[in-house]
Length: 242
Image (cartoon, rainbow, N blue to C red; front, side, top):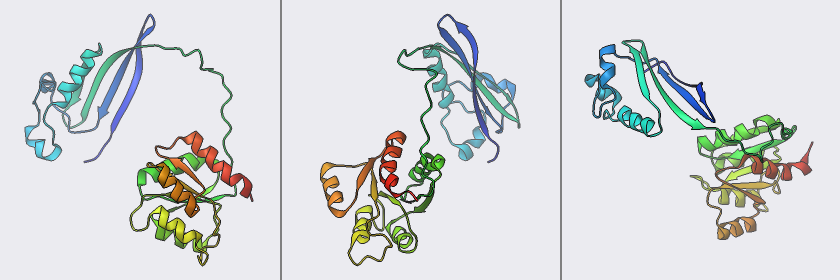
């Protein structure tokens, strides 16, 4: 109900071209007595049987973990203190690999500067919202969020934007209908010709043709490739710098 789980890894040993890695998974949970540690890796075993209804589980997780670690040539064990939490350890031997095509001292890529630009992100899924905002975070642009087409139209009727990132598949009003409303001759948005880039995981050719006919300028497919995403954004923002 409170506390944390911490995961860490350290180099334990170098064996020729191989590395022995030691992983730690530490929690601040209910813990257990030392006498119970020997049985927690057995199938269908749960130390706190009275806690099953609170925490769930079948007693198979650690048994499966043990088998996986053993198959990969490692070992697994645990320490614990009742009422204080537990720490699980496992080791894995991994091979080192050098790719001659990778230059270790390569010049870092230049960060895209979108200072002075304002972008409207129209997206209903939180995970996609966070991903797009994270990619744009270092570009110095201002990002406003609308979770559906109705919210997007309200923004566009009251504020100036340089670009719209439009998810095509949303509830209430989807991206296609929203684009139609923006491009209408009698639309009350402040900029009827604003560039609109569609964000879609289903960019079928017939859908693309329909969207282009409606006035969508370009497409970015999901899952989003950050490099391609920024290149596409820059293509449409470059000519609109303030």
